[in-house]
Image 1 (cartoon, rainbow, N blue to C red):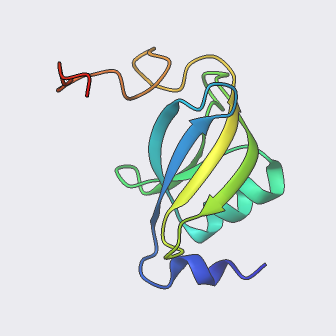
Image 2: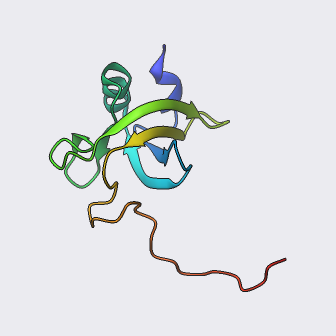
Length: 110
């Protein structure tokens, strides 16, 4: 598989991580070609930390691993949807998902 296809616009691409069982969005992280390759080789998620400027294996220190079920590219080949089996929580705060801060919810049921 030629991974260069996914990195034509940028060296980093967003990777949206979703739990396979309940389809909940767990987190958004970034992958470079090396982290995507390691993810494909190991079957567990690897990302590129923009702040630390290094690769990181999700859950390597916490034990909250993400076993990859599937990876899909969007229509422009510049964003990935990574479906996983999450062990424990996904967020470094201890929350199950990184998306727990509700900022708006419509009262309209239409």
